[in-house]
Image 1 (cartoon, rainbow, N blue to C red):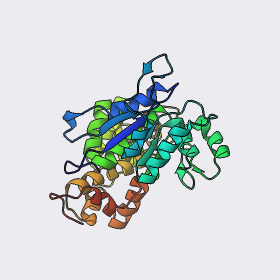
Image 2 (cartoon, rainbow, N blue to C red):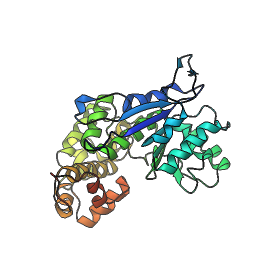
Image 3 (tube, helix red, strand yellow):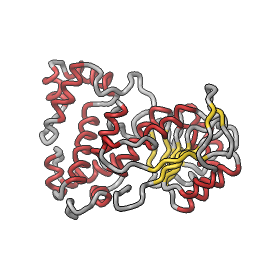
Image 4 (cartoon, rainbow, N blue to C red):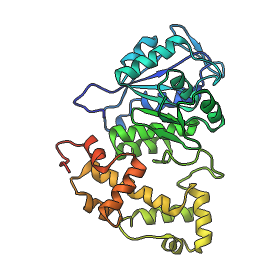
Length: 326
C-alpha cells in the first residue's frame, strides 16, 4: 500500500503502435493525474514503449516517456487493450513484463491486454478474464489459464485482469481501494462520476447499464437503506418505503442498478465494514453488528466473498498509529 513514509508507488503503463486510446487514457486519468483534493500522496506514473513515436487508433501520435526498460522498475504495470488478439506482442514487450513480474510487480491488464500477459506466461495456472468477445480465443490459445467468463475483473492477488473499457475503470478503482482504502476510492469515484464499487464478479453485460441514480424512487430507497445498514432489512421493507409492490420494486431495482436488492445490501454492508476496519479498532463482533450481520462468522464469510481476503488481512493493510490491531 502506498504510504507517505515510503517512496511513491510507481505505476508504468505500456504504449505501442496502433494503441487503443481509451484504455490507455483510463490508466493516465486514474494513476497519472495528481489529485491533491483527495488528500493522499498519489502514484508516480510513467509511460513505457518503443523508443519512437507510436500511433493510436484515431490518428493521434504520442511519444512514450521511456523505453521498455523502465517497466522492470515498476511497482504496478498496466497493459492496455492489445491491438490484435491473434498477434504475438513484440519480444521486447514480453521480456519487459516478464522481468517486472519476476521482480514482484503487480500486473494489470485492461480488456485484451490479457493476451500480452498470456503470451508472457504470467497467467498460466491463474484465474483471468478479458472482453467477452475474446474469451474463446483466450481459452483456446492458452489452455493453462483458468478463464473466468462474464465478469468485470478478476483480482488474483498480484495479477489483475479486466474486461472492456468501463470494467477497466472498475478494476482501477478497485486497485485504489486496495492501496488507499474505501474512503479514498469513493472520493476518486465521485471525481470520475462513476459508481464507487462494482464487484468483479458482476456480469460484463446487463440489459440496463449500472446506475446508482437511475430513477428518483430507486435513488431514494438506496439512500434510505444506507442509513439503516445496521438494521434488518429485506425486499418488503425497501419496497414499502418506495411505495411499490415487491414485484414492481424488484423489477425497477434491477433496471436501475443491474443487481438485486439483497446483493446490493450485502455489498453496501461490506463497504461500510471496510471503512470501519480502516479507521477504527472495533472488534469483528462490533463491526458485524454495526453493518447488519447476524454474527461475526457470517460477516467474515460475506467479507471474504466480496473483498477476496479476510477482515483481519484487510485491516492489516491500513494499520497505523491511529488504528489498533485486531
